[in-house]
Image (cartoon, one colour):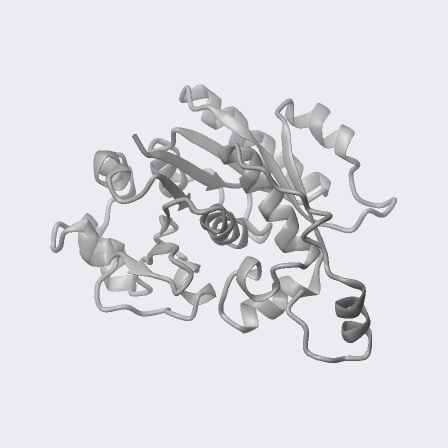
Length: 260
C-alpha cells in the first residue's frame, strides 16, 4: 500500500513547497514511483515552482467530482508525477478542505509514495491535509518564531493521533545567531531528519522552474534532500561521493555554467 507523507509547517515562508517538491524529486531519483500533490488549495505553488501554474485539469476538478484523479496527474520529464491545484478563486470557493480525507484511498492508488504539500498554519485547510497523513514531516527554519509555530503544528498533529516522522530544518547558515540543532531537537522533541543549507542553487532552481535536485544535482541543498529521501525509503546514498569534482568547483569559481 502507498504511503502518504504530508509536508506541513506552523507558518509560511519556511520552504515547505520547496521541500515537498525536492523530496519527491529525490525519492524519484532513487527509482521509486512518487507523486507530489498540491493540497495547499488557497495558495498553491507546486505548479508555479515547476513551470505549470495553470493546467487544463487539476486537483480541484477531482475534488469537485468533475474528473477522475488520473486525469489530473501530470508526469515531469524526470518521471515524478505532479497533481497541481487551481489558482482560480472561483474554484477555491467550491472546495471544502475538510473533505480531503475522503479521498485518501484515491491518493494511495496513484504512486508508491505520495507527497502532499499542505497549507501553512493551523487552519481548516492544513488540518484537512494532516488528516490524510500516514506520516507527517514538519518544515521549519532555525529561528525561534518558526520553531515555536512548528511546535504548535506538531502538537496539533499528535492530538489527532498522526505520526510525526520528524522535522526538516531549511535555510541553515551555521552561524551563531540561528538556533543550534540540539536546541531545536530539545524544543520539538522529534527527530531532525535533515538540515538543508542556505544555498543560492535553490533560488536558481526556482528561476528555472524545476527542483534543485534536477537543476543542480550536486549542490549542497540537493544532496541534503537526497540524504533525507534515502533515510525515508531505506536507500543507500553517499553525499560525499555525489559532491562536485575539483574541476566543477573551479568552473563555478570562474563563472562557467555548472549544474551544482
